[in-house]
Length: 104
Image 1 (cartoon, rainbow, N blue to C red):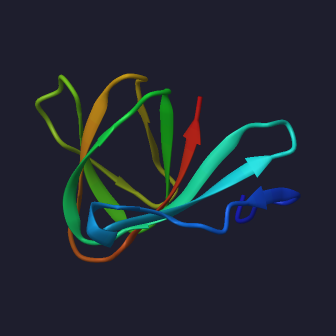
Image 2 (image 1 turned 135 degrees about the vertical axis):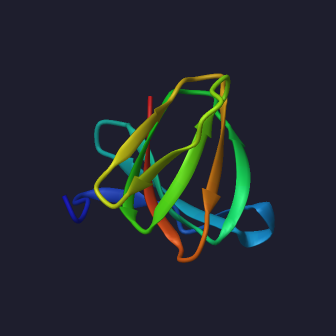
């Protein structure tokens, strides 16, 4: 799916890590929320409250989930799951990484 229809978008951006990650919250009619964003080249650590599915829209990244020792690479059309109350390291090397974060 290349777009979301019939949603509300929060105009104020979520800006993390000195602007290296910027996203907007999207709320659906059923109350579910997602965020749509971009991570610029960097290596960052994110903490999660709820479980997340990170869907890669464009670009690529390397990810290491908490408790794992190996990095895994994800490209456009791929996704990875992050448990709730956890964390993950993400490395974006050359081009911006575009993503949709599905919460819950």
